[in-house]
Image (tube, rainbow, N blue to C red; front, top):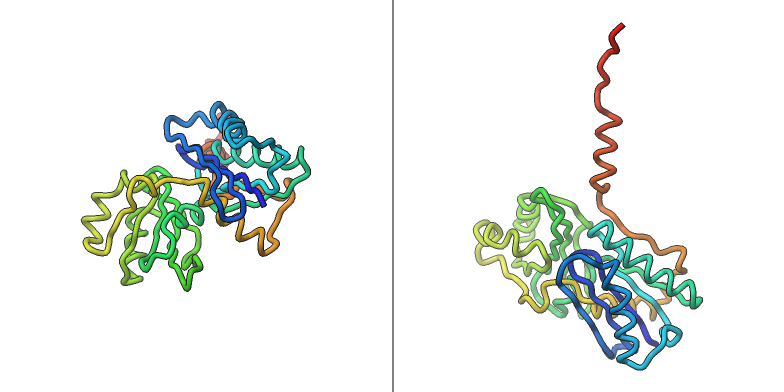
Length: 241
């Protein structure tokens, strides 16, 4: 079973191809957010280098969010279009699940954090139970201060992953002390191989989707939607007579 997976939920653009549990290739670019220009060439290049054509892929998988609204739409749309054209199934993988998978078989809690701006992060907490990844909280959009309170309540050490680590690293260290650890740079950001690994497990369980069913997953409204809501609820001044 060959799986192509991608993640474009943040700054990183990453594409991987796996055959069952064997990673055949993975390309990652962490430079600017030009996913509309770079993602399809990366897909074409990895297929060329692996001497494959799109029809050789059995399942197409994508990170579905949370994350950048534009990045998610580009990635999900690209996967859906290829799967639809080839009559293949798709699998959506939550971004935070895939990020936490970068630190497998770990005895500590793993906390992926994506920058949500305004001192907020998209996050969840995970642990490993007999070789299985378990999510022990809901997917959350919270302030860093609120996240620290949640982590303190667990009483356990936490490994942080994600693009928000660099933004909040010193603050986390100052508030959590020895209960705070950080993944190395090579494991901190999104990896399409992790998306593919989870997709493979889902495929074995029969959790497949059609290209029409896959949708991006957002934890909050876009900036444009929030501004529109403000405009709708803005008190109207009485018109002069």
